[in-house]
Image 1: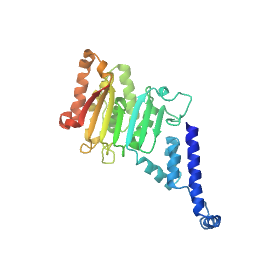
Image 2: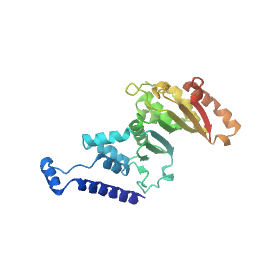
Image 3: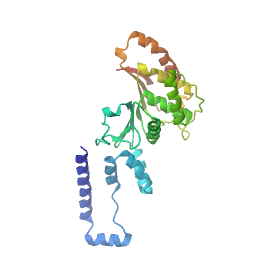
Length: 286
């Protein structure tokens, strides 16, 4: 798949070069070289094609090449309208020996996969995440947060986002969560200092926000209000059109499990002020 895409890219670049050759004679090329000392640079649309078929981690590093590269990559990020973040077993998408399959690219130092195209970005973090994985994910969220209008997050990623807003120190949060796991406690007792990013909500343009969860993961949403972050620090309430809570395996859940998890939902919905959201809030079972 990657080889086919690369051949298409090479053909595209050759086509662009042939077009230019029709309008620029050899004499004009020589004159252009003499006057400028360098060959004419590739047009931006060609670079965007190259970015499409390159590792997103390489593209991010290329911002440091020069001011023009920084501008092109920044422009690329500004077109991202869809952001989808999952926490799952990475081997289900890309077996460990491979660094990419042409669609998903493995982070060189973290258990993270990423797929970026013209208007969307997908980030997948390993279900058994480490501190390094969490830090890289937090950086990825910040890279795409300002332009995404449709956002889908797993419950644990949503909690991570709220913790980042509350603490500004993901490593401290991760260490604390590890201690919670060992003690089997599920309450947050960290001292937090909620704040905004650049005087705006973390997701300033989001119109549709989906939080994916299971009944077993609802306790993660139960902790969200305890971080002390108001919803206005997460999204613009006037711009948000829909907040969807998607509960997986909800139909197969027993009445006992449902009853036991109901308090978790109550706390979370109270924090969201779902009664005031009206039709903007919905629960979906799958």
